[in-house]
Image 1 (tube, chains in turn brown, orange):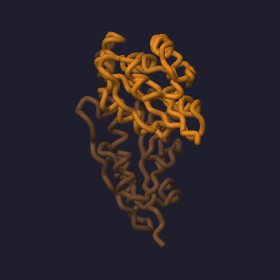
Image 2: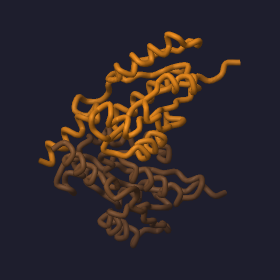
Image 3: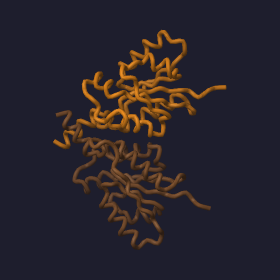
Image 4: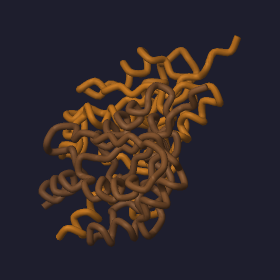
Length: 148
Length: 148
């Protein structure tokens, strides 16, 4: 009996936008028609440490919005110390989806998978949407310009 | 045989946030356990005419994100000329959910329902979330302050 594939995706999802949705839909599809998609939503402290700035929207609300998206089966907050190794060993995904802008995550995942007993498929999700609206930072920039 | 109730909600949903989600969940619940929720997403031109400023996120993407939310059965773009009368007569909702900040919509709906043959329940949805993050305009303000 083939069990449904577990797909793992991660992100901050600050100012949820169309590009996030499309990437999560692609992630889910990468696991086949009956896959389950679990999304690790980065904690405020993790975002602050990695990007030098707290997210606009607090972690609980970022998690709740991602959880409310149709392609997402479960959204959970990450460890405060981002620990890809622990996440992979605990959740044991079949597929890991990595965003176009997540090169650091890709590298960390590749290190973990070198000494990991199970085969895991890595898929890279694309950048979506018109140039002005495909990232939270561009949306923020547009807001600042319009309200100036 | 009791058919499932149709609930109608409307909004711009620019910068989708937790308060939008909670209001849509409440709207759906107001129609009972097997209700269907249809959301009219305001067109860019309608938002610009009513608020004096175009939305940050284009209408197609605002619609797609609302459609992707679990409580939403269908999200459709509104008429360019906001026409509550046509919307109600075409969709024939059992329940109309009106946001805490939609007094203008409430008034327009009440005018239409005065000469409308069917009984329609009006529910008012609450403001949700911490004070700083419960409206798109507050989120915009926070972004401007942080990036200044």
